[in-house]
Image (cartoon, helix red, strand yellow):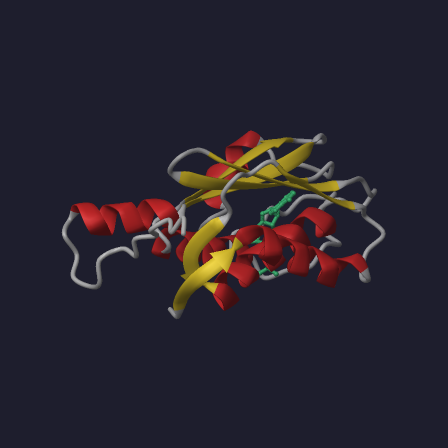
Length: 176
Ligand code: ATP
Ligand code: MG
């Protein structure tokens, strides 16, 4: 993992832009976050967004909005990707983070995939000390949520634990 400082709102806009030309589903971005900076691997987190937005479109064959929301508390950034698609039966939700798990029923038979996307998403999010979970109503739609620690919090921890490195820069007001 190549960790760096990332703006999640920029990454969402970039990823949504890639889909905009490929789909008629409106992609709505609701940015309610006051802090969007996480420490992460840009390529891998982009892969998470690509799979989750891709799934939201793919499993909404009848159309509907794909809504991406961003909010935060003092510790974590919360991203959710919500669709108005076919949904997931409650009993299948717990299986879907395992590799090659797909739901095989008549409404899905025509929709392709290998069943790796969510397993990879979970692996990547866990490597970032985050969490990912699914909320869904069959026939109504699905929301996939993930949470990542905000970078400001990471820095605070580092200072508290007396991590090595330079002291924080002091900004001194000069009123001359
Ligand atoms: P891949 O991502 O490897 O191309 P996939 O999309 O089928 O294949 P996952 O992304 O892992 O695999 O998703 C696993 C299964 O979970 C899907 O096959 C589908 O049945 C269900 N699923 C995932 N996202 C949604 C969604 N937004 N709405 C409804 N079902 C979903
Ligand atoms: Mg997928």
